[in-house]
Image (cartoon, rainbow, N blue to C red; front, side, top):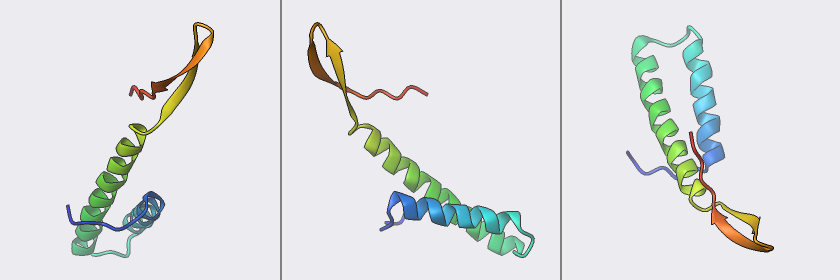
Length: 76
């Protein structure tokens, strides 16, 4: 994947615009394919950002009368 210098929010915003474009009927087949490819790159990029952030989230839990940090575990 080429290097993207987008924030998560920018990637999602561009992806939403691509979805709107693809739902319309103004694009040629070639334009649709290019938008689809760009959309997949953006999706993978945003997903990677989310996965990296999940590893940084920590929870504070009360246990045995004290408080300790625990890794956030997102089960899908």
